[in-house]
Image (cartoon, rainbow, N blue to C red; front, top):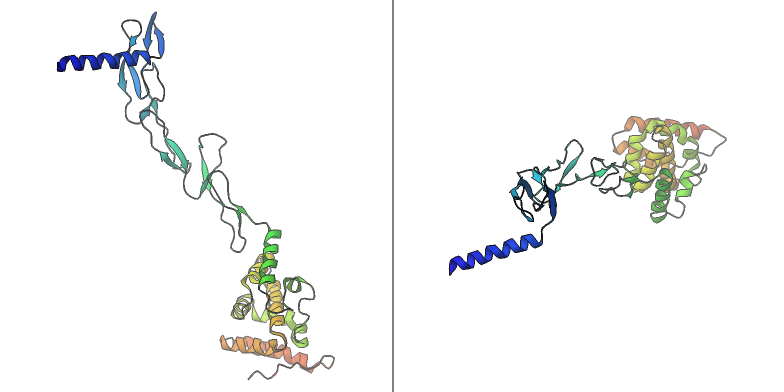
Length: 282
């Protein structure tokens, strides 16, 4: 009884394979192809019977019925091309490769054959479009950065007098103490960008203004120092000269504080300008 059941099952499987047979012709005989994941070992001996097949070896595959004596090699995901396996190769399907993290595809083929590292935008520039497996990063254009800086400053105005239009305008120091206003171009080189930046940040000048100046005058530290000193001085108003000297002294920049005082003293001695109201710094 058991033998009959096994024999019946084998006949059923054989009938199902014949019904699913994809044919090919060999020496006048019509044979059934090997299924996916298999390769041909021996052609059929009688028409419309199955050929003898073997499993594909490791690292090879066949994805469709075939009469080939070898399976196709699995595709390697080249590290030199910045690829890695998304799906490993099996006997019935090839490897599916993808770009490594933080890389994007540069080939016009599908699947991708080469990836490159995503562009990293400069500090303060910002990302317009994030990097993805199909496209590189797109950074903000200088005009867009300036627009963003405008929005930051307009949102964080220190007072009704401190807005982005004023620090980019030729008359950006219109409300500062008259004596300091006149000598900003002389004072700024004495302070230097690093110390001026620290003073501004310690006075809650929006970081957006500072980064925008760094971008606009990246090759001219003196000009960006002049600009930032003007922004800071306008924010401080009549107390600007006194606070500037105080902050320099507190940061152990007494030499610079003395040189600033000397410059302001020249202004005090100029009869064509009223004396500054900031001589007393104690």
